[in-house]
Length: 321
Image (cartoon, rainbow, N blue to C red; front, side, top):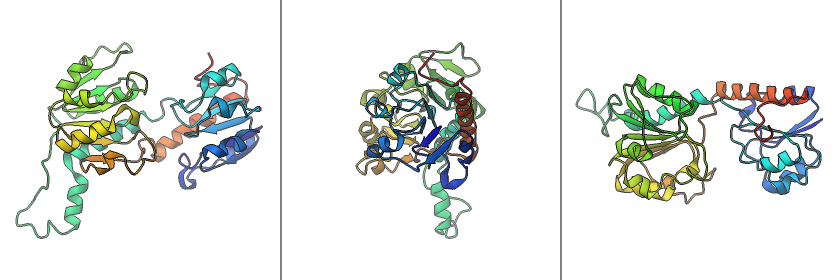
């Protein structure tokens, strides 16, 4: 078999993981990244196409006559025309549930940076401000204790549940909006509410929902206007959930005191993205999933997906029942 990995750089960053194990399944080629105009030339002869963010549209797949399996290096599969692949009998396998703990950790990393301002105060100390201080301590911005605050969670899959567990460890109250509860009844400081009640009652709102017609630009001017004054927004889900201009305006006016996002609507962002101008918006470059242990877990699942296909029983298939 011929295997092509279209965008392997981020998954095996700086060579900390090897792709050599693919050789047991056939000849393989790994590209760091693939431009749209390069996709067909690189993938057209492959039996297995591996992609993370490189789009495999119907138009592209029509020109890839040999492809028998598409293996994703991600949980999301919207970069592949799964319906067309299914019509051709091409299974598409994703990487489920590999980053739950990592995304929950990043969620609270953003929250704690906003509430405790660690980077701001560390820089001040290194700049000599503590050395020149007349008192034993100082702070440059109001600091906030999480205990007793209310965290609103939009979406309550595995990540949402993990975030709720951490929030309860901080003695926070938790409000949850989820169209499907998956059998969870709440309790122990976790309460299922309407989206309106969550917006009005939460001090911090964090998003752990899929991107779909309901959630695209969910965080818009109307959504924000019904939030508490000075509330905080956290987004580690999908950038398109947020109307970035509306969030910028709310950050600028102080309606929203701060935001922490690991995702943007376009990645890498355009230089005119309004959130880049907001000093009270803390932005990380889509790294919730990037911890060494997290990527190791991803690659183990990926190896299993390749092996299962090679043995005739593909697993984690998202487009064919």
